[in-house]
Length: 213
Image (cartoon, rainbow, N blue to C red; front, side, top):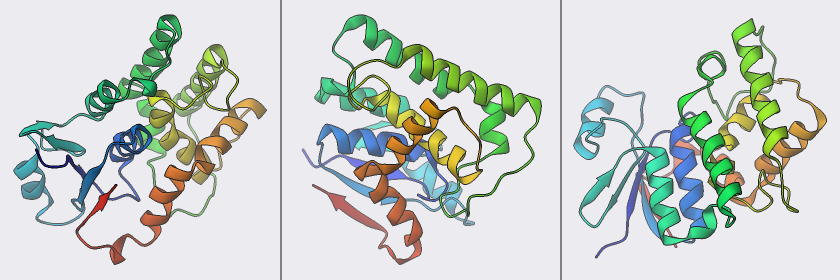
């Protein structure tokens, strides 16, 4: 069986691609990477060629395509259960906050799209966006536990899902409470995130595909 292939969108913009990419890296799963630019005339055809859903990310493994970011993360967790907290109750909380990001906070996502090349600068936020920002911070406060700096102590899939949120907060200069800011600083200083961020800055210089050990 060949190595899994993760098809991703532009690193600068594709928050959904970042999430499973981080999970695969944290799981220690070797994979090949293929970027499909999302801003070209042939993007739709390229997506449909690899994804039944016509979207990225897509993981190809063992002749099967998995085309949802959370499903790919769960696939990685089946290979490395340490991607979720070991305690069943805490694991349920981690899945809850992950699902909340997967399906919600559309006002924040629409008003503040992820752009890793955007110089940090504030914009006017409407009430719906402010409500999302407040809800995210309240949720982080409610579930934060463990001795480590991440949401549940040690890094988990929940952190993968909130890393693009931390990037949004940074690039749109959104003010946070002290604990939330410290958590975001931790996510944005993470070595694997920095690899993704650095690649986003030189994206046009990268070959069409490359591998991760």
